[in-house]
Each structure stands twice: as structure tokens, then as C-alpha cells.
Image 1: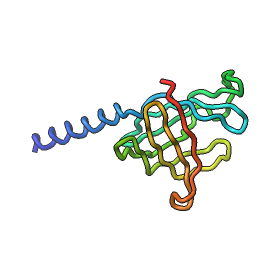
Image 2 (image 1 turned 30 degrees about the vertical axis):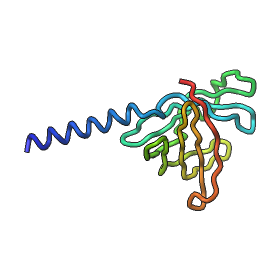
Image 3 (image 1 turned 180 degrees about the vertical axis):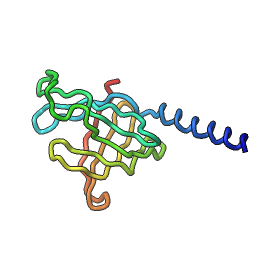
Image 4 (image 1 turned 120 degrees about the vertical axis):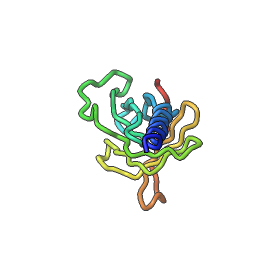
Length: 133
């Protein structure tokens, strides 16, 4: 029984470390919104899934916006890595519309296509984010 528990612990530890090294982890810059400003989003593991938090905001022209009301708020959660740079099953919050959508992402090099979808994924709105760090 002890050997089985030790083996399970190693498997679980290995799964966590693989997720921790997921290629999507890091800081990502969103596309400019309607106001011309953009965000930095930190993407990291949250349990066995991937989540993103707003860590910095910028005004049109690039000046930091330390008074941005949504700093520290989650913007992506429950995203599941599906392999080959694809992520699905999560949710994304659109601060400009204050709505939550089903979400999917696709990583290609230093670009991350992030989409929020309705109607079972038939209608999607998305952005291309670029890696900052």
C-alpha cells in the first residue's frame, strides 16, 4: 500500500511540474481596447488548469494606469491544456463589457489567440496577445 501511495504521489507531482512548465505561462499584453489602452495578464497554473490575472494596465499612448479598477482581477480561469498549443474549457471575462464567455486559446510562438465564445462556440470574439515575459 505504501508503494502504491508513493507512486501516486510521484505521478501527481510530475503532473503539477509539467503544468508549471506549460509554455503559455508568463506575462501577455492584450490588444488595445476601445479606449486605446491595454493590459498585462499573468498566465499561470491554478491547480490542474490555467488562469490569468490582470497585473498591469496602460492608457492610450502607453502610460501606466495604476488606478485601473480591475488590477488583480482574474480574466481567464479553468483553461485546460489540450496539447499542440490549444487550450479550451475555460472562461474569459471581458472587462470592457463586464461579461463572461466560454473561452479557448491557441499558442503560436510569442502570440496567443484568445477567444470568448457564445452559442456553443459558434460565435466568437477574440484578440491576439503578445508575450511580454
